[in-house]
Image 1 (spheres, rainbow, N blue to C red):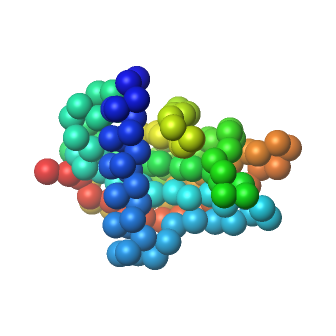
Image 2: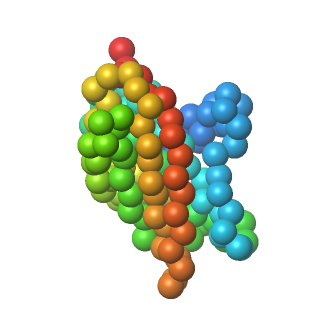
Amino acid sequence: MSRLALLALTACLSVSAMAADVIKGERQETFGDVTVHYNTFNSTFIQPDIAKAAELIRSKNQGVINVSVIKAGQPMVASVTGTVKDLTSKTVPLNFKQVTEQGAIYYLAQYPVDQQEVRTFEIKVQTGDKINTINFNQELFPGE
């Protein structure tokens, strides 16, 4: 991916993260000296050229989850896995891909959003031999 496209994607994700923080409070978990920041949003919030550069599907029925791991103020490499579960307990695995650009490391995964509903996310972040789990619920809406 070109540096410009990734920079634009990072900016887009940062704006989404800030908006989520203002509306719903900061979304982060701290595990000792490691802090995990996360947010999720509909993929239609991403501009088409940025979605293409990041190899994301831009659709009203696709959500994106963004995870970053910070230690001592610096981004760090981790292994990120997870699932998203709907109200019928149907579980979809989240296939995260690592994106590294200009001193930033983050992990992106997509999942289907077929209707408005509350989903349960379980994210596992492994740093070294430690595995930390984040569980959260979020109401999701198909995009327009």
